[in-house]
Image (cartoon, rainbow, N blue to C red; front, top):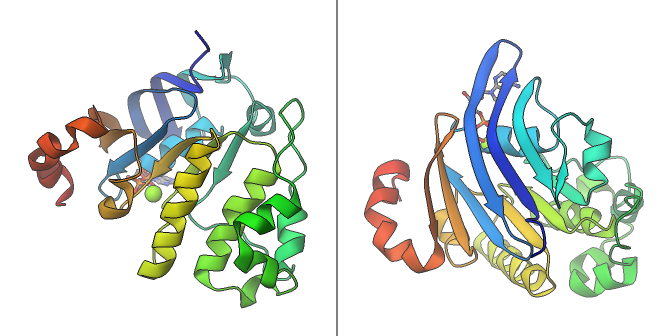
Length: 236
Ligand SMILES: Nc1ncnc2c1ncn2[C@@H]1O[C@H](COP(=O)(O)OP(=O)(O)O)[C@@H](O)[C@H]1O
Ligand SMILES: [Mg+2]
């Protein structure tokens, strides 16, 4: 059997003296869409950052496509085929949409990513707005661009932090279609979400975090049965 796309065992992470993750365990198979739910401050962003080597100290094990990465710097971790889309999106204001798109170099050792043509076919809005400055793009366009940019690098494992946050319902629907398309193309996706109604129909499996630990894990088929627990943990 192929290695999991992501296999996390007893992950602990610190920001300075502050111990934030207290033993996170998670397995994501190639092609799965997994959603990480939790209240604000639960440790979801820190989990994504720890996977990328962007927290302070990390302990435990994080295997990406079978490769142990716990001792590696961020750029080496990325080269195993991960694309990280941070909550703040990271679009450069002074560059055009297309310059932003072309900025990250392709990952060494990964399959080639989507071509600019493929990206514009998938995101027609970005094609129209290619010459617009980063700051002139709407929130939705910036979010599409932030995801499109990592697709170009060849990353096949995508870590997406709160992509639906603060966006109008029509844009959130477009992002949902994007996730469905990427899943159909075989991408592996770990999404952090506050917006349960956005995440619920998209994910194959769910993890719920609280105080730096995973407190619930279940598949899409169990979602209905888990609603009372989720209501208690998340207020959904
Ligand atoms: N840069 C940081 N330095 C110190 N503590 C942080 C930092 N970022 C987050 N934290 C703390 O780590 C905990 C988890 O935060 P975070 O991972 O951002 O949660 P979530 O994404 O689930 O809302 C919180 O208690 C938060 O205050
Ligand atoms: Mg967060």
